[in-house]
Amino acid sequence: MPGLRPGARDAGPDQDARLRSGRLACAGAGAPVALNHDAAGRDEGLSGLPGFASLGAPDFRRHALQADGVAWPEKNCYADLWIGLLHALGLEPRAMLGFTAAVDFEGDQWTFFKPPPSDLRLLYGIDVQELTVWRPLLEHVEECLSAGRLVSTESDAWWLPDTAGTDYRRQHTKTTILIVRLDRPAQRLGYFHNGGYFELQDEDFRGLFRIGLPPDPGFMPFFAETVRIDRLRRRAPESLAAPAWDLLREHVGWRPDGNPFLRFARRIEADLPQIRAAGLAHYHQWAFASIRQAGSAFELLAAHLRWHQGLGRSGLAEAAGHFDAIAQANKALILKGARAVATGKPLGADELLHSMAADWDAGMAKTVAALG
Image 1 (cartoon, rainbow, N blue to C red):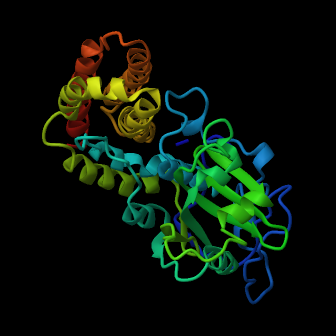
Image 2: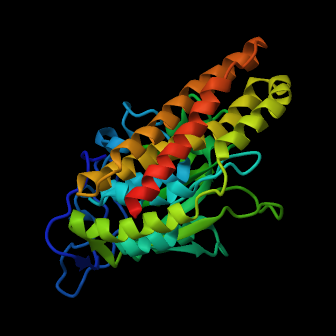
């Protein structure tokens, strides 16, 4: 599957910003759902946070992690929406990325990496819980936004205009979006997806929420979560780095026992004839689950290490360089694979795969040494 300003500003000492009220004032998207006001009647909700007051699809600027200059502007739908949301909230998304150190080759795919809810709560005061979808999803979304909670939900990309050229009105594909604005009477919706913030309306709105469709006993509701930001924590960078460093240590301790790229290389060699026989469409599905996840995860890990380096930690620049090399190598591999499947020629990626394995060993060794 497939920001407002480069980086986030965290000023002053640690503080709990309890977002009691306000409304999502996003440019050009109709009347947003109003959040509750506090006793003084002030607008202290999302409109008072850096980024959200002027949030609008036409002028939304991605975070540097999702800019066109990176190897993998789009990672996976879930990780991407968190980068976008944190950036729009004026928080530092690079702080959460230590979890990518634990990604592994799972046999038929690489880890579909997601920020653990416990990490989000510790670093930012954001609470993520599963939403029990016991009535129409639209009713849940309306109630949650009215109470100041956001909603992350699996969705059918057929109805998402930001996927034009791939899935939009072409194929039914599951993805995940984060809903931050809703105007039910006007049938308009604002959401984070992949690398940006987007808006949809009218027929797409009705299709996304299955409005007007007859009851279908075979339809299973999509998985959804509520995202509470009423206890949002805004930290100075140095203060944020301390728990992020502890989390990195924990995730590095959970890294694969053996080199995952050696296992990946063996599996590619075994599976390539079947992948080639299944054709390009099958290859792209396989490549998303494997090559893209590996490449984008290690690019994020490199960014995380460089963020720590910039805040005074030493010995991480070389490790980040090794993980960046893995990201670039996977970018080359995905093109080589497509050519091999399309033409029937040999893949010729042994050297590339072995370089990834060597970079993983070296990068992890240097990271462990830096952690002490």
